[in-house]
Image (tube, rainbow, N blue to C red; front, side, top):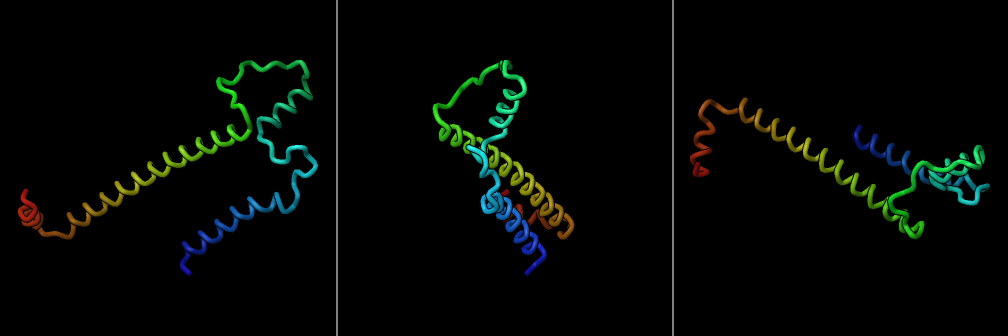
Length: 122
């Protein structure tokens, strides 16, 4: 197994452990909603400290249910992942193109590309 394959396997196992261990160890069993988001936790903590606290603003859009809110969050995450994948793919493609152009420039004799251009009809 190559070094990269070992690293990828280790990272995959680590991610799986991060997903499974909280469930297997029962972390959050004592709570009503064991895996509530940070926003809900913060709201609870603030109202315990300052019961009269009023938020500065309200959300622009309040989804009708938690399922829709989760779906919108997943959509947002998918769009963000797509943008990042596009960006990194574009950078990799440009880098590979530059490497190929540099290899052609180093490996060929002067005027070697002129014959290739004539073959292409340029």
